[in-house]
Image 1 (cartoon, rainbow, N blue to C red):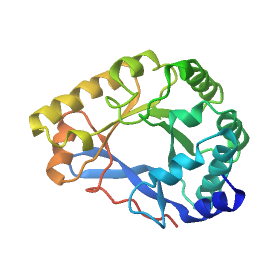
Image 2: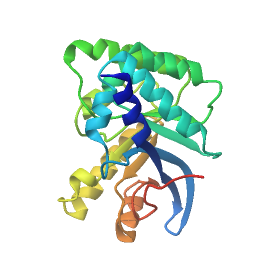
Image 3: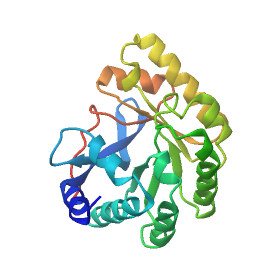
Image 4: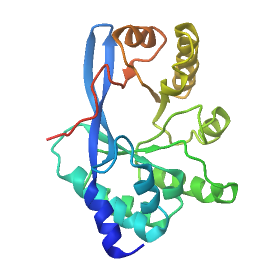
Amino acid sequence: MEKNNIQKILNNLFLVYQPIINLKKQEDSEVINFEALLRSTDTAGFPQKEFCSMIKNNETNKLFLESMFTKINQIKSDKDIWINLAPQQCIYPSTINFLEAVRSSCKNLRIEITEHPITPSKIKDFENFLFALKKLEYQWAFDDVGTGQNTLAFVLKNLNGVSRIKLSLLPFYSLKPASQNLLVKFWSSIAEENNIEFVVEGVSTKEMAQQVWHSGGKLQQGFFWGKPDQLQ
């Protein structure tokens, strides 16, 4: 990809931030951190095409990470900022080199590993990346557990060093509330057994927030608590 095209894509990309809530009691909530979500001036929602073009290889991935970090560094927040990394990015040397370079200057940066699959031949490289994250003392999470690559078996195999797991209810909106609650209870028990945080995403109504809370989901994220927006 030509340099001008790369720069054009990067100029059109921006970040919005969605709050993650600690619902201590049913009516007592507190913003504890934010998830940074990628957006583009050219498309609505997640810019899949632009993102895929930027993580095609080690060099464009490096430019992408540097650009996103510049944007994150411009906001003033004392809350942790969770950024998403696709497994494809995790196998590039540029990713771990970048995270090592910014470790001391951005103490509140946290990592979410998305559910997108990688080829079986790259699994070992991916596991080496997770080991390097732990060595750098980054807090990191498995995103959208139970979907894509982040199956129950895969998550359990790679729990060493994980500080958080995130369950999105978005793919399970077709389930009845009772079944959704069982799903939340199951993943909540996995998190509790392993002494890690558990966040439920996709909470869209007050009723859902209360049901999730009763099922063990004290940390929540979704449109009910706040839509993704700019941070000053």
